[in-house]
Image (cartoon, rainbow over all chains, first blue to last red; front, side):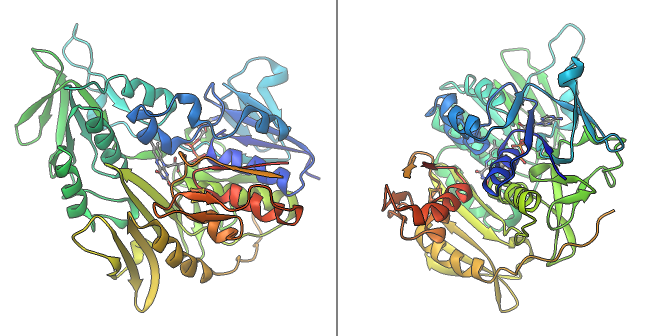
Length: 407
Length: 63
Ligand SMILES: Cc1cc2nc3c(=O)[nH]c(=O)nc-3n(C[C@H](O)[C@H](O)[C@H](O)COP(=O)(O)OP(=O)(O)OC[C@H]3O[C@@H](n4cnc5c(N)ncnc54)[C@H](O)[C@@H]3O)c2cc1C
Ligand code: SF4
C-alpha cells in the first residue's frame, strides 16, 4: 500500500508529479521538499522576462498559492534532502528537528533538477588581497535577479557559452543597452539538440542586434583588471575587458546528494522509460536520464515540457498504474525577439528540408528527416505551421512500452 | 468551470490547440486565443489536460 509519497525538488517536474498524483486520484499523503525558499517558479522566464526586466519576480510563479493549497500537499520550502536510506525508506533533510528532518516514504520521486556548471577556471582566485572575480551563473530566480541588476546601459558584459542559454542571456543584456560579447570555445552557436546547424542564422541575429560573437575562443582565466572590471584572458594570449562576466556553459544533474545510496550509475541517475530507478524510487526532470525505447540509450531531459511530461507520467503510474508514452522532446527559445520552437528527435537527423518560409528571412520551418521518415521540426517565427506539422509528428508516437521488473 | 489564459506567458507552442481545438486557438503570432471561457462539465477533462501540458503553464482551470 502506498500511503505517503515524498517528492524531492519543488520545480517543474516535482510539481507536475504532485498535480498528476492528485488528478489521477491519489488520496494519500504527499510531501514536497524544495531546497529553495520560494514557491515553484517558471525557470524559462529567468533568461527572458526576468533578465529583460519586463516581469516582476512574482509573475514567474508556476502556480498560485491557492492552487498549491488545493493540492493538499505538505510543501516544505527551504528543506533540502541530503540523503536517502532505502533500507528504512526514509529521506533525510537538512532540518535538524527529528519530527521534520527525517521523512518516511512508501515511494519517493527524485526531481532535484540540475545546477549550472561552473567553468573550471572560475574558482581561480586572483592574487592574494584582491577579490576573486564574480562569475555569474544562471539557474535560480535569485541568480537571475542578481544578474538583471548588473545589466545596465553601457556596461561591458561578457557571456561565456554559445548554447541556447548563452544566446538568450546575450540577447537580454543587449536589449537592456549593455555592450555584449558572446564567447564560446566551439566552432559556432548551437541550439540544443540541433547542434550547430543554425549557427549562421544565430550569428546574423546577434549581429543585427549589436552582439559581438567570438567562437573558437578558449578562456583561461578571468582576473580583476587594473582599471574597473575584469580582464578575460584567452588561451591565444589575447584579452578583453569586461564589467560583468556571466558563464552559461551547461548544467549538471543535481544528484550529488544521492552518493552512497546505490541509486547512481557512474554518477548518473538512470531510469527506465517510465521513470523507475529502483523499487519504490522514481526520477523525473533534469536530474535524471530516462531510457529511450527507440534507441535503447538513456537521454537527459533538459527542457521544461519533457520535465512536465515525465512528472505526469510518474504521477499517473503511481496513483493509478497508468502507463504513458515516452515523451517526445519539445523546446523553445527567445533570442532577440525571435521565437524558435523545436520538437522531435533532432539529433538523429541525416537531412533537413525547408518546409515553409524562406532560408533568408526570419520566418522558416524546417523538417528534420532520418531516411524517409520525419523525426523533428524546427520553426523560426512560424508558430502555427509548426503546430500543424507537430500534430502529425505526435500522431506517430509509439504506444507506451510495457513495465518490466525492477530490482 | 472557468478557463483563464495568460497571453504574456504563452510561448505559442500550440499544445493546447492540439489537445482541445474546441477550446483554444492561436492568433497569427501563435499566441493562445480562448474560444470558450466557460465550457460545459463534459469538457473539464480536456481543459485540464491542456492546462497540464502547456509548457509555459499559461492556462488556468478553475472549478
Ligand atoms: C535560465 C533557464 C532558461 C530555460 N529556458 C528554457 C526554455 O526556454 N524552454 C525549455 O523548454 N526549457 C528551458 N529551460 C530548461 C527548464 O527550465 C528545465 O528543463 C526544467 O526547469 C527542469 O525542471 P526540473 O523540475 O527537473 O528541475 P529544476 O527546474 O532544476 O528544479 C529542481 C528543483 O529541485 C530543488 N532541489 C535540488 N536539490 C534538492 C535537494 N537535495 N532537496 C530538495 N530540493 C532540491 C532545486 O532547488 C530546484 O528548485 C531553461 C532553464 C534555465 C536555467
Ligand atoms: S499550450 Fe500554452 S504556450 Fe502553447 S499556445 Fe497554448 S497557452 Fe500558449
